[in-house]
Length: 247
Image (cartoon, rainbow, N blue to C red; front, side, top):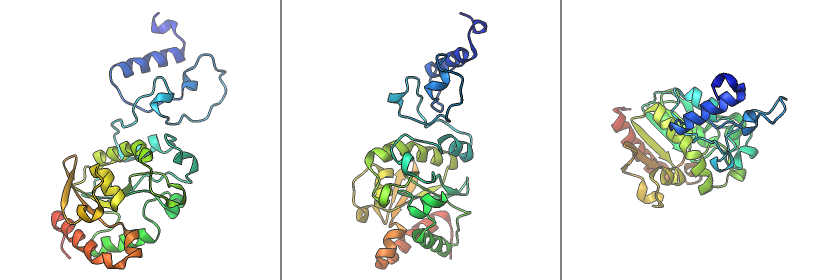
């Protein structure tokens, strides 16, 4: 049957099937939007769902042109249960072409309320650390492994990180930072795919997909254990030296 003989939905379905067969990757469309059997009434916006639940699902870690485009494409994600409990999707903040990217584990209560990473007490301490490095939020990029807050600020679950990590990978690809800073054990272990304790990870350079990566204490840990600040500053001096920044 020629395209002219098909309904508009059928033509759309055929075009998408051809793109899938060619290996193209884009956002998952709700099957309801592609069904000729459904009444043409208003439907909710399509959401991202696991590939196992949608026959024509395409991986979501597609190549996007900008952080804004990427954020708009994934901000309604419901791939894991956290999508139903969040207040706001917390994408990231900072310079789209930042030389340094700081990565934490997950949003907290303040971040979930405001939709921006590191805005609570830990975020205020991170701002002070950046200021001591002669930097601020407009010069770096700040993000998390997870984009939604785990209930009660519990640690992210492995399955949650597996679903969300492709989003972070795409952010890193778009920003192309010269170096990464993993804030805390969970972020460092997720980036390096290791179970090595934080004490053995920090204080030296690693690599994430060819990008230098340094792991240090999470600012929240510094609030609980101020004695860690000295070691954290040693780590930040390594970052400053790599960036060519001096006090």
